[in-house]
Length: 410
Image (cartoon, rainbow, N blue to C red; front, side, top):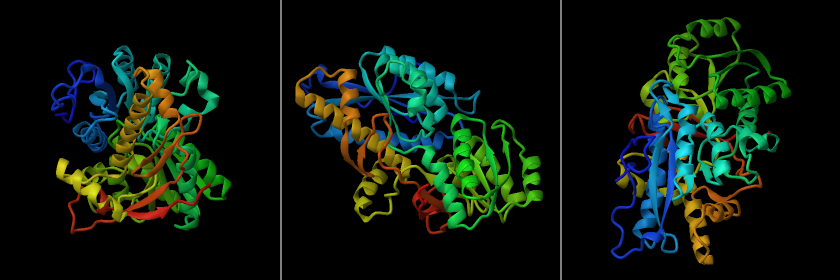
């Protein structure tokens, strides 16, 4: 069984899904896939739900005939550190090197965070190792302007089952103006690659649409007190507050914003979409926050009922939308393995990378296909608002994050 956390630095000792294989299965009918998420720090609970999505996909495949007879050995790597309190780019780079040096690893899923992605992409590029992120949305990593930095070996290796902040930030600016009728906004970020990029994209569209940006400031994610900046925001009295960043700072911001600016419209990106907002922030402080995700919302679809029931039975918890995108990342890899196996070609990193690049796979979120840069062709941004539903557990993402609709495209 896969444990909730695994030592980041030891591939050979990582928990796997190899147990329970059919007797007589040849050793060469196994591929290894890395799963790099932030299991330590402020986003650990979200990472665990994402991990469950990959585990479920590979377990189901392994329990059946595999992908054209090929089974998956899944290894866990943790890019979070206690020192950082969240993802740590240095640890992400170490993990990338470990995957790159293990020739049995033919593909990877992750990372959870864009800052980790920026650290990993150049290393994985040199190794020719494809990785599919279910949640890292900073557009720079796949922007051809930065190809020399993030894919120095030339070929695309960084793929996404989510769209990027080039759409997440601007589309939420449209939603804030058109749907929420906010005419002015104060913008915060948490200094990370994801948070700064998301806030930049939001700010650019807000100004383009004529929204008054009353100020922008940066939060230290390790600081404990944001009262001074929130008091400043209160004195300016903007129509809304927008935060680009992840939950290490986001949890504290949400708690303190409830005390200082309780009636203000408050929103963030997918960094504020996570069970930690429900459990660590709690109610009533979390009530009313808006958050986006960079993918279609499918959990309310009646067609998903059987899948959700299987997930709840397996993990005794509810999934969230990034559980879905992680599951879909695994489905894309399984499809690539299946197609390579059908050609009778060697199961190499290069063959898997090429198969992933040409994917057109029917997944839970719909067809997953990538452009030449590795970006998802579907660019839907979904909007949620936290509304407490007493009939369900507080950590139930499906019922405590109320789906508000699709953000208008920029």
